Length: 296
Length: 255
Image 1 (cartoon, rainbow over the protein chains, first blue to last red):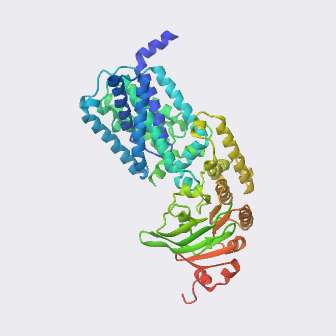
Image 2: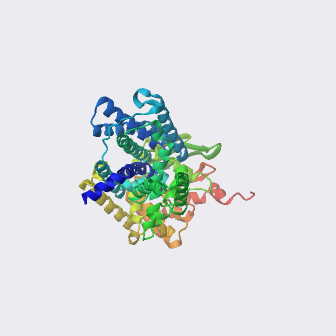
Image 3: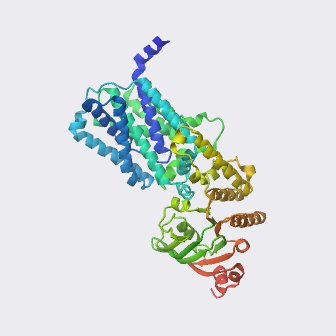
């Protein structure tokens, strides 16, 4: 049994790790998305967490776990600073502002040679990230999201997503809740950045750009924002699919694009809405209402 | 403990269009005050300013002497001001109970740690508020609809869910925006009894309504708005006889 697992990991270990890492990231983005924050800041938070943790392990000699934690805390602190003004903006401007943040981080990474290695990036990062650590973190993330969703706090987040004006009038501090979720999302993204950096041997400025942010946003949306396992399904599916489409690199991008379009058009509740045997009205409209109300 | 609400020369413009010109009124402690006026006279705008959804352009809004004109909506709610909406705003896929529980949000005592680790504090808090909300659902007379998604309920029942949700915030002042709209005669009678029962529980009520009969039945005091100003105030009997009120509602003879 162990031999089979070893064999499997020898061939597909990287893919498994990537799936787990992206699942973790998907739950981080879900935190923001659950309150209608379509964040494109994920790439920026990951970069902050990655460079911070690599600096700490390679130049300061801090233990790996603390370095990753510090990366998350740094990203959370940045989320607090940019979130306070940016969250006052309407949905589409929020998206633009978080995108601008990711770009700013990329430009800083390109130019701050002492810490980021500039355009060349950083090579020879020690490989500390292990599969079992990722499994544990994913399980913890799923449990926390589960606990959050079924509590009064989760219900108020769902209410904010559907009607933030009404939620405020009922005494929910919409701004504080959005800001907390944005900070939590930044923390997870920063931590994932640190984990990713210690998995790949190399990081460079182009690893954490807009594409990364958009991909991360696509995971929970494709899987389904209203389902507990939606982000997991979306992340694994989106990570494995390009590997299956490896026969043609050009068709790969096109097919991925078409598939995302198809899910958004025909399954607005995400892939997980296929699994609902009992028709629930809530499953029928989440993505659509979310977009509309975010733009209000 | 009921609260007193005082508006003093409150004004609101939208890009130059005067929605509320200058409104002064008092909703006396533990009474039902009716706010009536033709369409577009500024009633709902006034209510939105009281609850903090619109910032005022001028004037004071005082709740027991505290000026709340610049407060954010959730802070106004925290001071004990609850409302219902003219165009009912419920989470249509959620059950009656879950909708009403949203009103109890502020009274949940469990913290984030309790939530994330499912500590006993969470269960205690949820249980206490669920019982309180169930009692309120019973009070408004729809306990048989407790676990039904509200999207399928009748208009009148959805209004009742909104009232229960507003009561779940433990208000000292309750603002009702056209609660009788779309209700039949029997439903209106039941609603009138409910409003008076809520008043007798020690809640000040400010009521916007088009149906004069309904307002006269439940209100202790009536304020009439027209063109963003109050044009009359008094007891239901007084107001109904005032020429300015008849004019505002029916128009002048030579108009």
